[in-house]
Image (cartoon, rainbow over all chains, first blue to last red; front, side, top):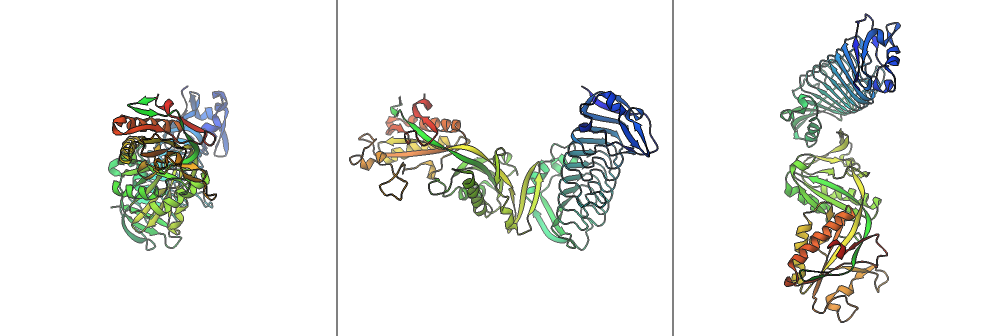
Length: 270
Length: 298
């Protein structure tokens, strides 16, 4: 059985809600049934076959070809299976994803991996603001799983993040790790202003010295035993994080945010 | 059955169902991993009074440990799951948490999960940090030498305790030399420990005592100085008997360990003063696992 492949036929002006097209919801459906699914497009609904050419039938392995930045909610609540996207995606990629794998060969919009529960998300390009964060008004962002972004990410990455691992090969915008509850965010590139703003717990693992606010206290330089285990867990990834040359266990530790609980840590490679 | 002049008695060792777990201790170097492991497995020769039976299984190369440092794997056995959990936690807290540069990891993933560092974390007084890495939960507990890293839980499995054999020799030095040879070979095996001092016990016991308060007492039938005073099991020229007790994760592990140990003793043979190999049992009524010596050595 070949992968269920949806190839975009036309680029619409209005945004498209792609949430019905996830592996677990398509399981057991014929290609005809899938073609007849209606997607919200602005204020109207459109059939899947009016937007995509459909090939293949393996609903556990969904491929979206020619995607562009107006396809929102791709992989929402995905629970098993694999979604591969060639092209950019819109907002809310992998929102509340429960398990499975999503790989985007392009850029992602706002709120990617927001409130994600488990599974693996890989974005080869950049990701917008509020990556792995909570929806506005909610108190817990990403709750588990692993997110890898090979490019740069916008502001508020990991806002309210509760658990899981967020790996960023590029740069992170302002307020990275803001209001973080727990979890791990690793940034290989540069970080912006107000890093870890109001973070309660959690780890910000950095390759470059950040610009820290006065509410982070220097705890000195240390060799930490958990870091080799953490880096070993990255070895299977298709990423710079998998490289032994990038692994380290000596860090400068800063604790904060002291204006909040103050149990968080910023660990900077030395 | 006679092997190299050594008589293998037509008897069996009787063993019991136990609960067991494995823990891996790592440290800056093998010396300190071993010190911590020795402390953790100390005073754990017999469940009769120690609460558990524990021993060092083997040393581990850095490539074999979770954190890439030298390590030691230990096995702990107890009669019940609750007792095992209590002993594990107490020993981990007093012997590994306290040991410089140490870290503690689960050695068995499957089975019922019992706390390893899950409750030790409270030593961190609120400064402890949890990390879930590759599906496993770890605790980082701040201590004076840096951080104590421990896995939250380890797996508890069904196991077998009390496999044994007795070495009957012409003299005490001959008996000890034979047991040392057996232990040297048996320590190369995985999944088993010989919990007594140096792996050898010289005070084998029988069930019951003339003193009502005692549940066990000296095995007078195998005490050479009582040959003329009790119903002895010993030949006239036997001057010393020593026992090797084996706990293993499975019956098959103990089978192998007994065969390897008895073979090492028999390799020394009658020429080195070894007379007989026997085993301790309770008539087959107490323990569900029976290890027939002649079947094992067949």
